[in-house]
Amino acid sequence: MSSDLYLDSSGNYRLNESGFYRNPFWLTSRDNAGVVTMTAPVAAGAQSGEQIYEVDSECVFVGRKLLYQSTRGSLVRLLDNSNSYFIAQDPVHLAAIAGTSAFPFLLTEPIILESEFGSGAGVLTANFKDIAGGVADNVIYFYIEGERIYRTSANSANLDEEIERIRARKKVCRPMFLAPEEYPVVLGAGGVANTVIRIPKEYHFTFLKITACQADGTASPAFTLEMQNTRRDQMMSHPVLSTITLSPGLTPEIITPWMVKNNSEIRIELNDISGGAHNVYLTFYGRAIYTGGTKTYF
Image 1: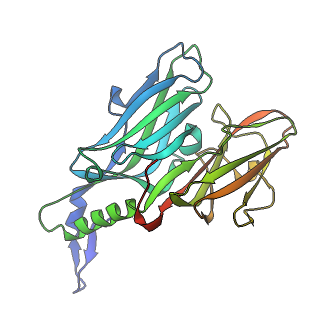
Image 2: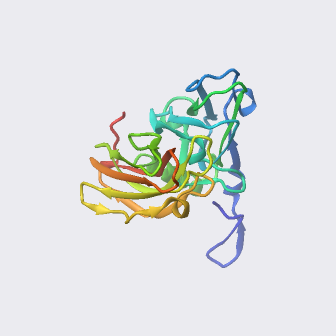
Image 3: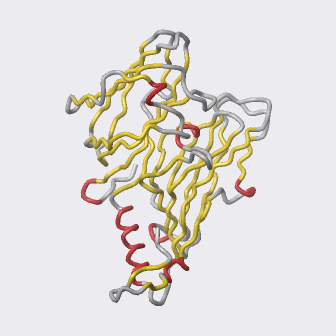
């Protein structure tokens, strides 16, 4: 984020004019004033169809926060259309990746949309899925909060350099949400469930945050979690209690960055201690790092 003023080489404060070419921006879906409505009656598993989130071709958008509100528990799949890159390739729970204005989900690795990665404007598409269905409409608001940075024609060397740095980083590092193979993870009363996350050959992955919720978006009943990188026989932890370490996207668990090589498998074991059966939407946020600065598209 730029400062309004800066000190020049003589120690005098100068106006940072690049600030006039950037502004805060809440990116919402293009249609229906940013409201996505799945009209009742809604069947379980019904989908909204592609919703368009678009920035104009004269700027680069840097998304730093995710916010949402929905009538019922919903999943979302996110695709950066400018280069066919999935931010969430498998549908993940909205409550696991987004928060509210008071507790937004902070994107350590931002979502970047910029026209020069493709043709025309920078476009992200979202496809929402109602988990349980219902007799009432499912009304969904999903916002990406960040800033727009505009190109300028005069005295803009610093700003242009920043845009180029942002573009160069996107070629190597992308934000990504990962879900285990079983999603949700089904836990019986007092039961144990095992699942895995597979890191594909295209990228290394740095785990940054972990969230967990149940179908309605509220915190999951108590269970313990244990994770292991089977490729290197690395334990992330001994069993830890979910009610201490895991929450929905309102208050995600921020972990010490954990980098895992491509072609790795993370084994996950969950053990219910709540005494009741429940489904766990266990979701991971992090940074995909593409080897050699290139990407093999999915």
